[in-house]
Image 1 (tube, one colour):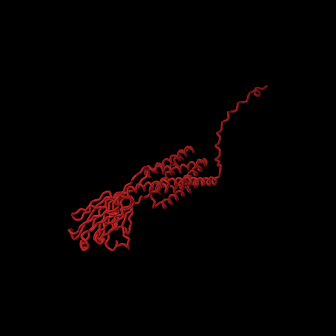
Image 2: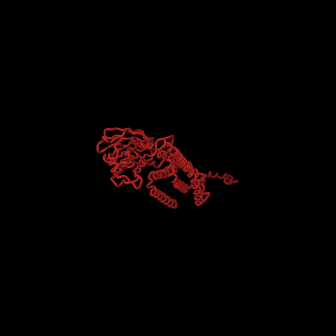
Image 3: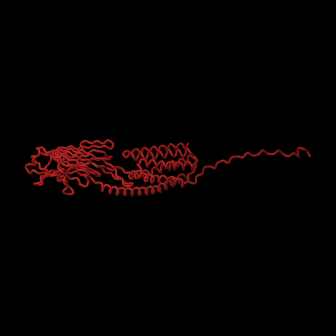
Length: 410
């Protein structure tokens, strides 16, 4: 047999293994169906936000009850009525020629456990004058009657008339009185007295002179001026305020039997529970923007995100409000918001990083959430411009999504 026919054929070269191509991106459902289901999730999550709102409102009601107890023990609104000058023989009140009242207020917060109430201390200086001839023809004895509320007076100085000092007596629970013989006093009788009081909510003064000047100033975060007329001059600089009422007849003439007053209210302002409730108004927008960001990430990366993962992200967004409520009871609202939002942003961005195995995606989601929560805090801080700022934020978010959708089509 020929050698060529008996030779063994050369072995074939080993086959080069080929890498298996990645499976094509498959969706378990259409985007339309997924968007509908995500919308249903948003509705369910808003029920959770409603529960947080109920808890916050309940704790606010409890805080108001405790604050009312604190205020009741400290003292309520202060109303300075007098001193009226009464001629005892005929029980008639003599109108003063001049009347001046200077009130210096220092507000502060009283705490009981985690609850607080706004109260104030006030130093009051009262002075005035009357013409002796308006009284001497009727009687030589007059009675100065001052009505404030004895339980709210912490310090009381004697009534000074010329070089005399007369101690006040509390004949009843409503009025302080000081009787004086005017027979040896000069024609123009001048008096003055000072006292310290404790109170809350507001201070009001009744102008009782033909010429009156009333000044209320001090430290208060939210003063409001009202009463029968507004002040002639007012100044508000930070926590310092000052208001002055001046009059000559007939600007303060009482109508009928109703005595006119001037007053300053010390508003509590927006407390921590009201701020939490206000932040809950933006819960739906935050959830919606976060879901849209995650959905765009899913489309761009071609990595499906199960509905369960969306729901867990939404739950984290709701727990943010529980964290905010609990921290705000022990810290300032700004600090509580910073801590709660930082925890939520780190949790969700880390979750997206591990789920999609991409640090870039996790960082991007973190930046988006930081912008969302930062914008929400600005809305809470600038209540007067909340509507216009919120509209601009939504417009910019829509513009960004429209631009991103065009990029994905290309």
